[in-house]
Each structure stands twice: as structure tokens, then as C-alpha cells.
Length: 253
Image 1 (cartoon, rainbow, N blue to C red):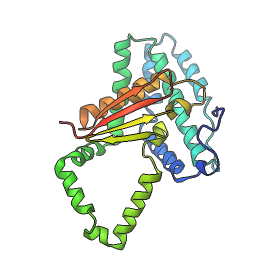
Image 2: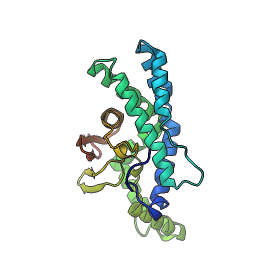
Image 3: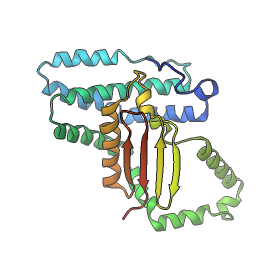
Image 4: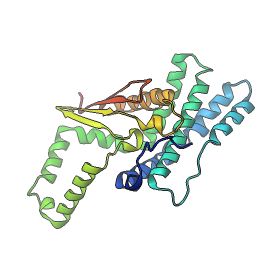
């Protein structure tokens, strides 16, 4: 179920460093949270449904929409197939669960499950984020990375700095999830405008993935970061449009 247009670029854009980073990111993400649908959400749906067989049949129909990931596909095409299938299936199971719970129960259920999976997947990264945002941590990094330091003066240090500068300029760490962003930074805050979120377009069905967006992305990410780290994160999706604004407050409290 490929998108009807060249949504994700052509030629070199299908093979460039960003395409590879996005593919590897999604591959790793699927290894951590990809089984939440078949191992948690679908079993719950079978329990609350009157006919578990119908649930299995409907789920099989959704799985049949998956496109095979071929060896010689570009990294961008592999990313699209993996990510698009995951979002399509997540949006489907959320829609089915929403028919068996009231809105508050449904929201708490699906967000809590996704947030728990994200916390487990991120593991030691959450404490690391907290340490990185402490003033003493920032000062320590500044001393280590300051121009003229031992690391900066060495050949290895200069190579690391140049590589890092290239990656920061040409590769976005969140592109795999939302696509290109317009970023503005002010004192203590980052604002990212997402003009056309790839969460909506990767499935290729010509509509916004509202439930995956509101519960699987906004709800779960805000629950994880706002409750466990000093990074206050707020998503402002523009549904039924494809755009969204992400605001991150650094080092709150």
C-alpha cells in the first residue's frame, strides 16, 4: 500500500544517510515495542469481544496489508514498509478497543500500556537524560568539549567533532517518527513544527492516523517524559490536518 506520490523522496533521498538512520531507528524500535500489538492489545481485545474468532479474522486482514521487505529495497522503502505497517495496525487496534471501553477507560488503558513499553525500551536512557540536563552535567560536558581541550586538540577529537557536526547538520534523530521538522530554539525551550507528520503518511491510506497520533504518540510520550524526566514535552497536533507542533521545555524544576 505505497503512498500515491513521492512522499518520501526519490533517487538519492531513498539512500542518503537520513534514510539509513530512519530505517535503523525503526528496525530497533520494532524490536523493542513492535510486539505490543500482538502480545498485549490484541489479547485484551479478544477478551472483551463477544467473538474472539472475529477479532482474529479482522486482525489477519490488517496483517495482510503488510508489504514484504525485500533485500534490495532502499533503506527509505524498508523504513516505509515497517513503520507504515506498525502505525496502520496500531490505529486499527485502538479503534477496535475504543468500542469496548468508555473514553476515559480506553485512554488510560492504551496510553498506560504504550508508556510502559516505551519506558522499558528506553531503559537506562531516561536516567541519562536526567543527568544530562543537570547544571553540573552541562558544565562538565562543556569542559570536556571546549575548544582547546585535550580531546578537541587531538586528531581523533577533531574527527569526532567534524563527524558530529555533519550528523547534526544533515541527520535528524526524530525523522524516523515524524519526518522533516522546522526547529526554533529559545532559552530553555525547543519548538519543533512538523509540517506533514510521517506517522500519518507512512501507512499510505490517504488519511490521518488519529488514534495512533493522540494515544500512541502524544499521550504515551507525554506520560513518559513529563512524569520521569526534567524534559517537559507537549504535542499539539492539528488534526484533521497532518501537521503538529512539539514543544520541549528543558531542565524544568
